[in-house]
Amino acid sequence: MPVGTSSAALNLASHLEPAQLELARDPLHVALPADVRARIARCREFVLEVSASGRPIYGVTTGFGPLVEFAGRADSASQCDNTIIHLIVGHGELLPPAVARAAVLARLFSLAQGRSGVSQQVVDSLTAMLDTEFAPAVPRLGSVGASGDLQPLAYVAHALRGNGNAFFQGRLMPAGEALTRAGLVELVLDGRDALALVNGTSVTAAALGLAVAQAVRARRTAELLSALMTDVLGCGTEFTSVGLLAAFGHPDVAETGASIRTWLEGSRPSGERSLQEPYSIRCTPQLIGAARTSVRHADEVVRRDLNGVSDNPLFFPETGEVVHGGNFFGQPSAFAADQLNVALVQLGNLAERQLDLLVDPHRTNGLPPMLSPLPGQHHALQGVQLSMTATVAAMRRAAAPASMQSLPTNLHNQDVVPFGTQAALTALDQARLLRYLHAGVAIALRQAVHVGARRPQAPRLAAVFDRLALEVPPIVEDRPLDVSLGRVADVLDALVSEVEGV
Image 1 (tube, rainbow, N blue to C red):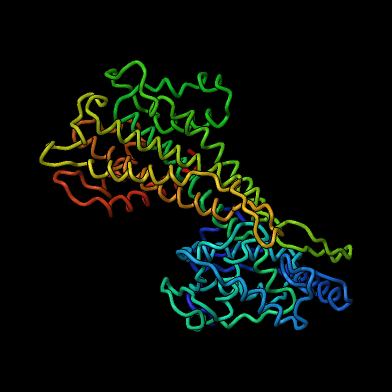
Image 2: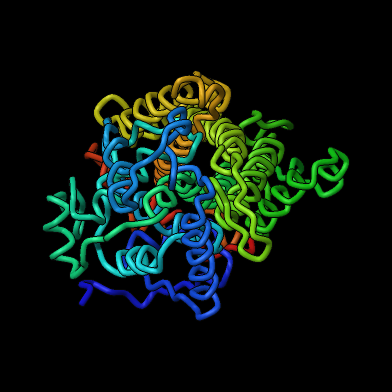
């Protein structure tokens, strides 16, 4: 009996949403409706029929990649062994268990389309795994995002077969031991099972989907913090004017302005600020709105990936076709991930500049430097700013596009590649770093009120401020703030999830 099952559930007959990938971090029940099972079974039967007829099928009757001109192993189980084993050469840090499990969920949805010819035991094994706290140990480096995420997905199959390593309840151990602790049995492969498991872009899609889910929250958080900063400093709100933003002609900019206006309802300018605020306040609708466009585009792309079929070849029992092609080439997600990466870095730039404004007495109507209650004896936000500067620098360095860094490999069989896996994992890294930049701004806003800024006047923002104040006491004397940053990041995620309609 699987150990550690959960009440969270998905249905393979439905569409997979990027935010649902986050459910896979914990035990998740995935239902296999009868029509999905029938679709998978019919495709499997068709693959066996075609194989028995002597008709060539890539990876079933042939070698892999440039070795397609040579015959594969005659025994299908041995062919499956070879498929997995020759790909176990990944390296680098291990993917977080939540990312590896999200990749399994994404692969499951692709296989459930009934175009890959897998056996029922494969989908049953993946669903059983997701219903536990088991996670394959998957090295980060090894995929070029073409011909699928071959090496990362090979490690998934390797662990499910009881080989290599895996996580159980967050602890790394031999995969066989993790299977036993989770109440799972080793996966047995034959036919086209192994190639179908590895020959898709499911790690790319999962990483990008997780990045998108966090980026949506980050964009909402940027709107919230910009509104809170406007209120706390007593700024004018003309920059959110309906007519002004409509005239700009970008719908997402207008939507961002509407969100900031909603947060600011009930706030009045202090009359003590300059006619025009710095761009880190005045241009927030334009900046965050542009990021909103990029996030929305990435969301649209990854939804297609998550609900499409990435594999080669594909099988069409209804027409008798076996179609060899390139549905494992992750270029759409690669482009989208790079664009998302850039947007996330610019949101990071905005957060870093907003903090810089808050700690500068020349731009806050006389609040003390570094928001210190006793400058010189206590340094308040000084360490936070140093950390944020270092974080933004790291984000900028990682913003180089991966999607056009093509290098030929595999005896020039893969002569052009998209590096979508690296692009998507980097976007996920950036989304997670941005959480801490936003947390730094939130702590600074909480401290600003403590040292003389006004309490937010807008009721919604006052409620947000109270939540932050409960989490982070004012800095009366210097203290470590590293743990507080993580807690505040979690609070901000929760706040913007609660007010999704804002």
